[in-house]
Image 1 (tube, rainbow, N blue to C red):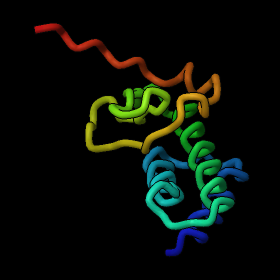
Image 2 (image 1 turned 90 degrees about the horizontal axis):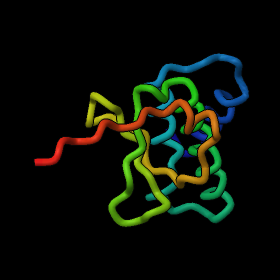
Image 3 (image 1 turned 30 degrees about the vertical axis):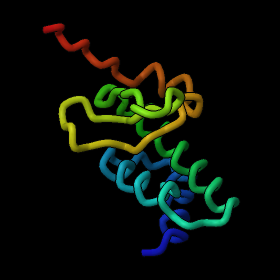
Length: 115
């Protein structure tokens, strides 16, 4: 499936009243993510807008299962990580792109004990 078809799927999902599963959202977030793609600037911006909207939808509805981890190289970027399944993530995001509801719903990671 081409990137354009994934974008159309994301746009349809976002305009729908149906709430997709968290795995469906994560899959679509990864497919519209323009980070490693060679796209024109307008398509890249469109991809990031859709990715951000899908990430907000994910966290607003399933946020208790995820936490935000700091990106090791960029202070304004976070990684959306599953709390109990470390291999599951919903890509990186700019901290300022989250809705208030998404930030309220997302889990706060438990502090690791100091050795």
